[in-house]
Image (cartoon, rainbow over all chains, first blue to last red; front, side, top):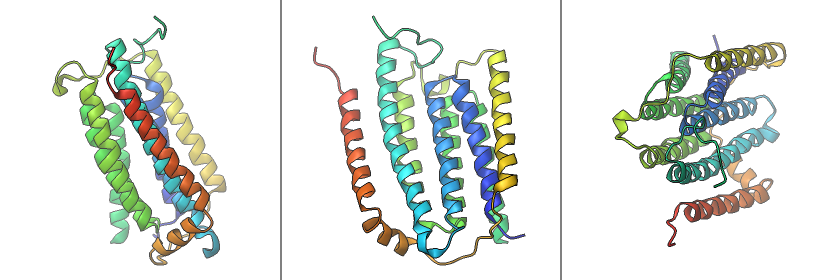
Length: 104
Length: 166
């Protein structure tokens, strides 16, 4: 059985659902970030898989979109982890259920 | 034979992601993400995009996960082995999250089954040439903008995390 695009679609759907579960279960901010990274990775797999559908004229479009998505998620995760460290210094916890007020 | 490698990477990605979101120690979940990102990078090679796969491996495994380990080290009170997640007994919230996740997966698979293409993927050669040409002609402006944004994000990160004098 040859590998076709539906295989990649199945894997990316599973990864997206797992990342969604981690993001909405909210036990820990870092686990929420891991869930968001899993969802970005599912999107990247989809973009790269669909880049194989069209002709060779626009074969680079999906791949470059995936590359930009990877770079943007790297920037986002760096910012988010900096904010996590500051939140920990302020609240002494990074459990989202225990962080309730933002004004002092 | 080559399909077996593909199925191995697919299984490794999904199993490592499941372990990462279900384990109780957060450092284990980050190390499971190492395996998951490595497997995803292998899957990208099977999708005929080797340059993206190498970039993914360098950025995620070499960059983001190391930053995440630093984030855990700076934000846990006890030592790393005791950094257990706040996991109460199974609550309604957890069941609802699981239900939403399964529903999302079913809906996604339904739409992929209805509209997804079944194009087989054949080897067409390395993609470095088309990516390089497109990056310096058609996508020159987004390329420069994204590099500026990355620089701005890292300057902002350094500003946020530095210690205040007063």
